[in-house]
Image 1 (cartoon, rainbow, N blue to C red):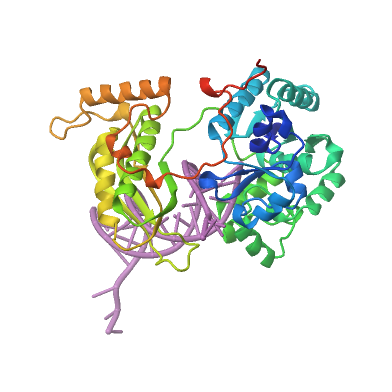
Image 2: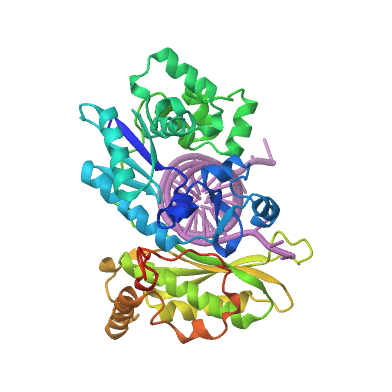
Length: 423
DNA sequence: TCTGGGGTCCTAGGACCC
DNA sequence: TCTGGGGTCCTAGGACCC
């Protein structure tokens, strides 16, 4: 792979919100995280108001009110569906595509006669067919393609497509020198701080650093980054999504909880979601971890943050069995008298269901229960998530998160289809 | 009042084995 | 006086990503 493109949607969640509500286009808009807590996406107009990524919304309510900012809860059903549409447009045009995140894909352009023309065509297709505008970076390695994409979005001169490979060396050097080291993929705030002590402050400094020294001081991951910045492709394109090594389901509560009952209902709910994912990838879990914690941002609360591991007697994907294990773990963790804020479960030590031999003595999931799980998954796929669920999930709804301003699920829910005209 | 969720990979250190 | 060395496996924690 010596020519790779990164296609990345601009303001993806914010754009999704405007596609079926065109009256919102051109207005400042922010999308909130789960539980309506933080700002996780902003339209260009909201960015122009100085509203930062990741800020808690309550600190920005006044600014939003003063400037008529539209506030939306996140609608992952809608974003997931728009993401699938983007991916299918890319796959129509390119044989080798890696879906890297909900709004980004790597595309192999090796052997394409005119990669820039190809990228421009892709960009037009996405705009026409999905109404999403993208930036595209093209380079010799994934890390450089990410860097190019960053430039394509940030600097208007590129008109959305930045091909690093076509530039004279002096221009590339100047571009790398113009960007701080933390704009490089894989360099976060912590690493940037440490690198600065070694006088590595720009992307160029990192590219020109001694890779052996980087390996000794920072590890093998950053060494690969350095080599990638030098145009050596070290990170392969992953066309098929790998099976998950762990499956996590957690949520903060809509309100502070002190009782065990609603937390038990939450855990049963999280196990159900995780077990569904587990069965979807054809795996069994051997360990269930349960997590329970207080709100770290409330200094008046007694800090609490604990995890417990419940090993299973045999690998399983049975919601009821996993749930029983998780609830036992929760009961062991729970202490009366504390304010709780979030709980979750994690399934680990996953093995492919096909590889587990049924043991004569240690029983596995019984065939009848496997059939029941298959039926449950089928019903929930056809009639909506949660149609068939454990009674334990219903016992106490006080844990449920806040979703005050979610837009309709325009593309995946019959009752919420957009109305084009009416009498 | 109010601060997300779901992943990956690497490393260090301890237990254990021969 | 003096107490090995190399390997594996597991876990916890840290850093990163979107």
